[in-house]
Structure formats: C-alpha cells, structure tokens
Image (cartoon, rainbow, N blue to C red):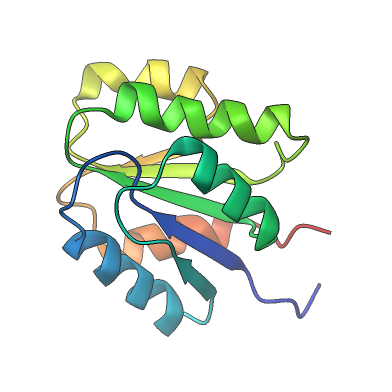
Length: 134
C-alpha cells in the first residue's frame, strides 16, 4: 500500500457564499490525515477543474447550498473528464433534494452528503472508497 497521503480539494462552486460547512469539512479532512486544499467561495467549474489538476488531487469535494448543484457539480465532473482527469473523484454536499441524487450520480458524482451526515461518516466513505492516484 502506498504511503502517499490522500489529497482532497474542497471547493465552493457558483455564487453561494455560505462556506462554514466547507471550512469545517476541510479542517476535518486535515485532522483525519489528508492533505487539503480549500479554494474558497465563488469558484467557477473551470477554475475548480483547473485547480484540481494543478494540485494533483485525488478527490474534489464540492459544497453547494444555493440550489445550483444540478448544473455546477456535473460541470466540474465533465470538465475533469474532458481534461483527461476523470480519475479524480468528485463528491458533493449541501442542500440536495433526494430526487436530484440519481441525475448527479449519472453525471459522474460518486457520493453525496446532505445535512445530517456526520463528519466521521464522510471521512469513512473517503477512506473506504478512495485510493491515492498513481
């Protein structure tokens, strides 16, 4: 098994400025032993995809509370695919209605976490499902 630490980028796509949850999650990931990059608020899908590639991350965690997740999350996944970085896992969280889950999964999002998901359950999901990229 590789000794390489997982690299996770936490990003806030779109105009949503509510980033407390994203900052808490970034700190949680750091405390769990992952390398964390936090991009801050108001990132475009293009900026997020470019940063993910530049930072050579294993996972992009997107946070959206504005309701724009149906556009923003798939846009990031699509851009990563187009840039031959489809092996970067994209996960998301925020206020996401259950009826939006399947379309998001179909677009390439690998996991969704909504209010009530514990930090431990998110870290456990990452540890179980993500391995450092080669």
